[in-house]
Amino acid sequence: MRVQSDRRCRHVRELLNRTLISLHLLRRIKYYQLPCKQQWNLACFYDEKYMCYCTNRNESREAQCFTIGHNEMNSCQGMSNGGCLNGARCFQDQLICPTMTLEGVVNSLQDD
Image 1 (cartoon, one colour):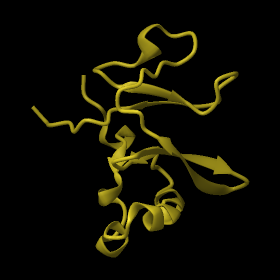
Image 2 (cartoon, rainbow, N blue to C red; image 1 turned 30 degrees about the vertical axis):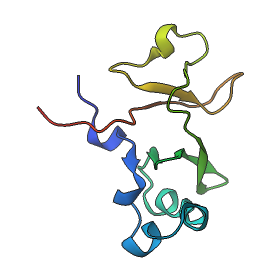
Image 3 (tube, rainbow, N blue to C red; image 1 turned 120 degrees about the horizontal axis):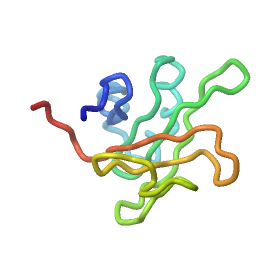
Image 4 (cartoon, one colour; image 1 turned 120 degrees about the vertical axis):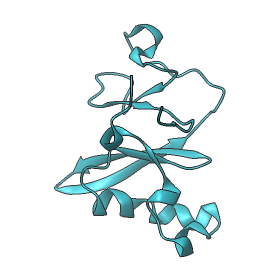
């Protein structure tokens, strides 16, 4: 099974320019709203510390970011193995009555 390229969570290096990428993470993260505002089809992106997903709010797009615990178990409520395939991790926007569920594959994928 392949991840469709338009559903792949992209690394932030693919979304921001070199000047912004060269900033320290604490300065760079304030620009993480830009990819969601500029690319309406973008579902999610990540860096070395954060997983971000794009949400619609009041006719605007926002990045909702949270820290990635590389060794923690993430599973979506009510789904065996999180409902995710190929070693992906499952993330929800809220524990109770989630409105969005994303699968994130943080490891790089290569075409066969």
